[in-house]
Length: 202
Length: 202
DNA sequence: TTAAGAATGTTGACAATGTTAACATATTTA
DNA sequence: TAAATATGTTAACATTGTCAACATTCTTAA
Image (cartoon, rainbow over all chains, first blue to last red; front, side, top):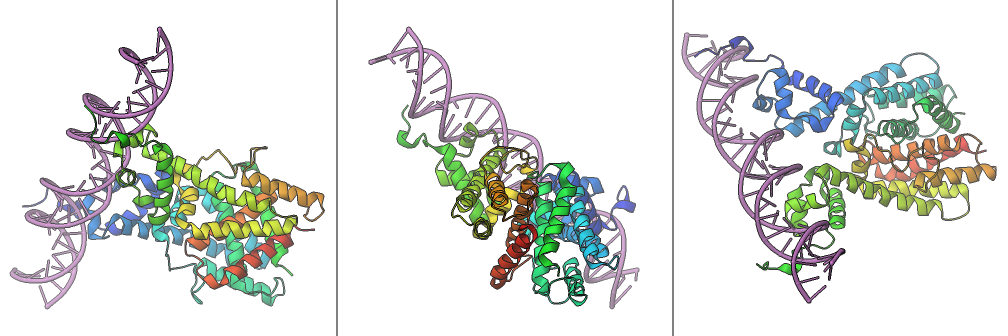
């Protein structure tokens, strides 16, 4: 027998739509408030349809987190590649990174804080020699600073890790409310950058 | 009628035991795997007994997180107060802090990453002028460095925030597996400290 | 001391949730 | 076009947090 509405029996792009809608729901309500029923209701399908594309809710969430990482990574990369001045590019990257966290606190908290991501082996991994993640480009920018004699010649991966740690730490503390003097974000940006630069520049 | 076992009808210190056992369960299995039934089974009480002490599971978890913070804070404080050399104390604090995160990754992730803690107003808060949290003592140590002309005279709270951010960032990246060259932890400690110190010392 | 009341613990029930099995419909392929 | 595959639906289930009604122990005031 024909369905009452066979046109929409198949969603068409449910796999992607689940990711996108999950991203939106995480940002507006937090990960804890995502249920398969709420999620699929927004997409006009039934709860179980999810299982045609992801083996479990956890695996869906992993994919959502991966998409969140790529969103952040895209921002970082374009900033790191924009302009000539090495130090300026590092400074801008830090600002963009922290802004991303401030603008998407729930998403940021989820992609970095989720228990499922404990043994994440993918991008941003120091062990991978090649690749074009934001972290790899950060390392490349530092190496450019080495060649131009702007940055102290030490292990660029360690230097990148130090920079990333500072920026990541600030982002976390800000969105978790441990620092909540919004007025002083600029001052914090300046001092942290100055500290990093004093530490690494020639 | 008498209970079959009236000696243990009342647990005696269930309120505290719930916190302690939750801390252990978080560290061994992660927050996601704590259920009231599993938790209370370990303590020999029924699920609902929890509600005599905490209004909801969320509120219990908040108390557990608070206890986790205090555990970390205790470590930090004692390290910051040990010895004379200001820079050495800062260095040791960083090492102890990062070690805590490495030794208690699930706990660390939970206390800092939980959605419930978004608008945390308690300790470690920059806005509180007085108090004796680890953060306050960190500020005091920096001020000591100012007086002794060891550390650049800038806003000590901002300086403390920069230091904390770096250490917190390293801790997070380490336990989340974004940095997993265990061999290089020492090198990372050294470089991050050198960077911080070059940035702030006179 | 003892009776009342407070504190603490138990049991049974409920709605919400993730998951699966059995079935239905659409799309692709041979 | 028929078979195979992909995608979606419905019904049912176990688990979970929560609450109401009841039981036991502890505390306190007379």
